[in-house]
Length: 415
Image 1 (cartoon, rainbow, N blue to C red):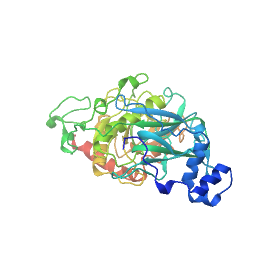
Image 2: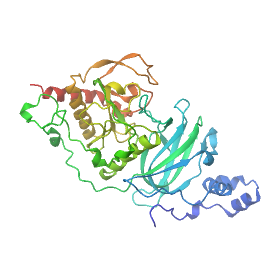
Image 3: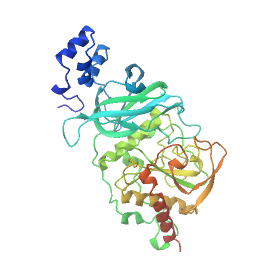
Image 4: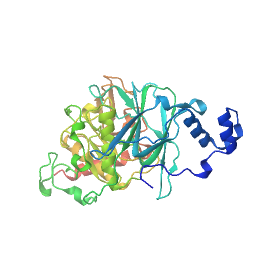
């Protein structure tokens, strides 16, 4: 089978002869249609003139390919007031998001299902998956007037269907991205020992005997994940000080491999810059499920680069996103360790208490109006500042542990 092309239709998916005749004659054949709803949907789609050819993504360039698909002409009425597209056949993609013109007020609820193979078997349609709203947001000065869902990596797929409920905003667009094949990348051991390298906040090598602050953990560079620097819109902005660390998750499936990680980060970067018009990827750092720390937003990992991760609070914080969905999945121990290392490195330099709370003035979010002073944990979850489930219930429940371990790591390096 040629990669990206649809598999042969299964016999059990074909409509009965009676259903075909009834549809062709314009008659009502309810029993036959109810017996084969997917086949009836396919016939109705063909009758409306929807092309049978697959949606074709362009060739990979800089490790990624992207296709924007207008949704309005493809949406059809469905049950319970929802609207959905037919099952659209595509060439291979692995990440999906939906954007629209306008804000988040009255944003629709978006679900997706894709056609993909598991365990090397024949491709099958998945269950419906919610696409969470993109609530990792910049402040004023970034963006092209579009909002949307988060870009969610689901693995290589050759078909997609979208279902929407609620308000239908203008210029709805489906964004399909092929993040490329699994890469053969050279990564160091992700064990704890290699994170005890002798560097300070500025990356200068120092003897372990002279450490007076928590050292910088090993970081995978932007070059390592293949950032195309020409995609950036503008220049980095910087915070004056650091008061908080905000913990996020990307809501991406958890079954990715090490070699998938660079492509996933490239996909998020492409979506943030090209689909939403932001300056750069939103997060200062990302952590994968294998325990690797990746540099996110450009401007120098040792500097206080202003991110686009926590609307209203980007001006005094840094954001770390864990690649995965931790609403119902426990984060691995190595993820917790890297969140501790990154938090200790930054907070210790600015003499913040990882166990404490701090007063922060909001620049305006969906939860706190502009100018409001809020007392928040120094290490918090995204849901503490915005109306979102991020970083997922399971990861959020581990924040007290992360705070304790971060404080312990900071104390370790003080003479």
